Length: 310
Image (tube, rainbow, N blue to C red; front, side, top):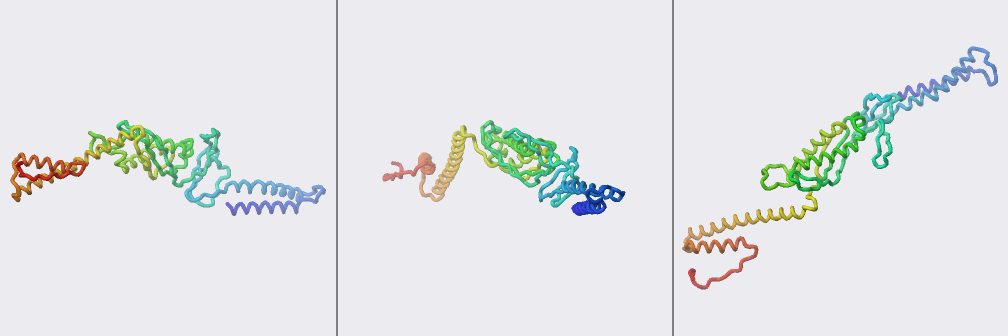
């Protein structure tokens, strides 16, 4: 089409030159058919050189890598050009695909027919929602998305950027209410939680977004949680509960170790005949060892200077 444009310009110039040579001199009357033809060629050449190149030039456009242009002819969708490079199309193809309203100003903004196919990142805001158990939590996500179907992105939703942001928040709220923040007493051990199963929760969020954004021609490359915490009003209470659980688990481990050590000590004393203890002395020894092994502070030794039974 670029070669055709140059040929049209050359033809128009040739018409102008031919018409100028055949036209009569200035202030001279038209006396022959040749002179009439010359004037017609001159006028046609001038009109053509002003109109035809402009129309042809309007059809040229460039496509960058990971960019596409939607072709619309008088409101009728004709297709999408995705190959990067220099292209020409019908000059009457529209340069915009309707308009959308700017949220900030409330004014209409024309939507360009050029659509970026590059991957984009959306960092969601911190949301306060209730988890499966009703505990208020703060949660945020980040998603990587891109436009796959340009026709759906431009014509099926008003503004696909706003649509992605809104649906991202909605999907995150839904996923957060589906799972508990942490393992609760009485729940199955293999239950998926927001804190312990990040990969499973992220995959569920990605699937939720894929279903919601399919209408806008958008695909999700990745979705991850970037923030997860209890809401401030219950954070201290939940922290104390976690600390109590940690203390109980530590105490349980200490008691198990102490019982094992006491049992080993009594077995070794009995096997090697170091000392013969009756049940009352064994009970006293067990009590003393358990106090030493399970106590918070170091035990203070007391020396017995008498006999074992005094």
